[in-house]
View (cartoon, rainbow over the protein chains, first blue to last red):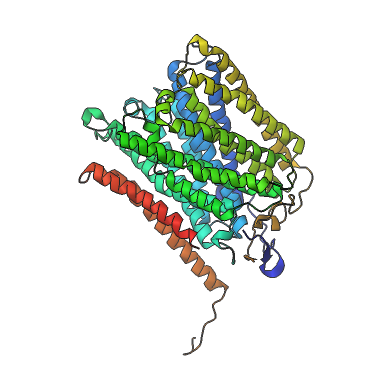
Length: 531
Length: 75
């Protein structure tokens, strides 16, 4: 990847004297500036992360002891559903879009996103959708009790909360599609002269591929929930067995969306980690081209493995074998990525600032989650682990320690560029160690619970599972409290601190570091030339 | 006024206009793809053999991703 840049006119930070912008609330409502919109996405994501986290802590509190203590079984199931939906559609996806909005134009030398007004609309669709999703808790019948997968026939029988959820998914899906169109168009059409695709920072590559995945699968999910809606209210029987429909079809369709969705969430995290590790190893990324090919391979393979989520539903033997081997094949390009990150660090001049600590935490924990994924990819084992806490442990190692740790790494990495101040390194390290230790305390025991046969999505459990559940709950609260340290670190960095230079990390090479810190409101009015 | 034989030197406005037009084309193309998948998926349950038409639209989604991602690797 080439990173030596020479801006036209000699100044990368020329803003054309257009630093003025509206102030007050109208700045945020009417803004078309990618940095403002990126900031709003990131705050929205963090807010939803807190909301989803509160749901998780309520669930863990209920599971602290056997028996019913805090919520009714119905409410427990509703919290399970909302925790999943809020975290995936409210926290992780918008968080990734926030980083994309902030950083893609800066990394490719574009003045803004290609469709700036549509960018504003994409964001402002999210708050009403989130409100609609959460409103389910307060309507008669409550929120859906189906889990985030919304399987029929239960989803056809649920109350008004299900309709709110379906509409919320529609709106969030529309927002995602608009965001993806914007990202692809920006990357393909607004790159600086000389910035060929194979010179782009890997974060941009990861988002280019993610955006294609989103455009491919979000309409499928939207179609599926639309059919669910017509089954509920307009007398159709797409998935309603009573009318000749096929409930298993919904599972196929859902996971045709749902498995690529996993990669929609993790690929941007791969991109973020690929920015952080070379910087703090003070070496170029090892095997740039192979990293790009691995991203593409993962994206394509993600469409061919959906039925591994349905091993216990009943598939033909040939189907089971295909999905089993195809799932294991994903380990190859993923292994390439992990190998290349390690090779990048090999003999590098590594320093352990907070972004690098989170990147290393990501590497260790994501790989752990990947290994447990390989285990459940084996169908005879999966039959035993299906719907146990082992699966809960597996996907939290991928989603939380994978994506969330990458988000933390990237936040600390770019905070100086965003705010113009250096964050407090000591506080950030406290955040890392709190998150790393308590994450493992919360989720590692779930492997044991799952191996012992504890089913997931239940509010009560047999006595023998008590000890590990108590450990897990303590870990969950510790992990939750650690995020308050993150909030403190970010807010104190925004409010002040040591002024950040244009390039606070001496190993950083991409275009955004040619701009002053904080990045000017309007950047790259004239495109830089990439040599 | 343009004189016969005169060659117009493209200026920055031309470049911007071309870039905006290219962006609109890309965006419109992607929007059409998303709409085809959405309506095509629902329609697949209503036309001909549902399993076959669902397979076709599913394959179309996969082919779209393969072609869209693959063609950028050559650049």
